[in-house]
Length: 238
Image 1 (spheres, rainbow, N blue to C red):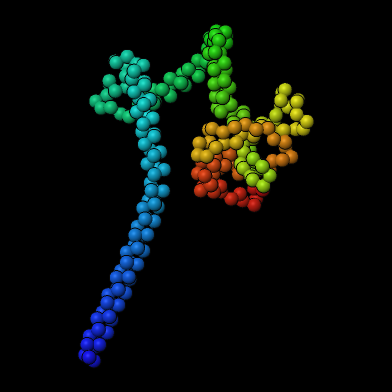
Image 2: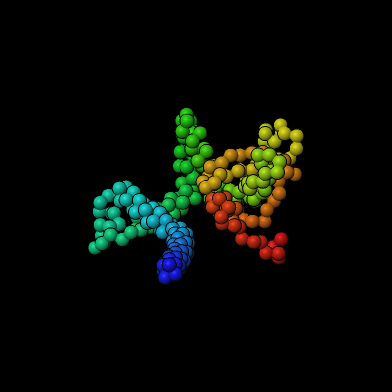
């Protein structure tokens, strides 16, 4: 009986040792799997923005090349007089064309034709309103004298105690300003992750907190859903 009990205890010890060894091996594999997953996600975060950026640039360049080739006669297409197709030649042709158009428009004759074209478009229903809106947007975005958005502000929205970032385009003017009892500002509230969509609200000047961060930093912060934090403003800049 004593020998039998020793055999049973030895068997239990062996099973216990095997169980502990299996548990340790399982923990090692679980830690290794967690590290591999972390490395995988880190690799995606590092490579995905670069890869997507280059892919979009590649697609845009080839789209412009194809568009320019369709507009030009075969003998004048960028690839017709070269032994091989060079990506980006169509984009260069388009940039040169736009520069020439700008030079022509800056002259007296070009200004005359532009005014004549705008006079004609202004008398076409529906098209006139679309053209006027698009012209206003492009003039606002590309003008060197103005900025699309002046500053970043923080305000309580949609209720007290909840804060949101907004972009101030200008002080409120015109009929809307005349109907309101106090000075207001136009605040555009962009949405995440697409900051080009959003809504416009009129906010009293006293209810907004001006931020030191640039508009570009605020847009990055909004697009990332709060993951990309704005750069800290140096004390000397405050």
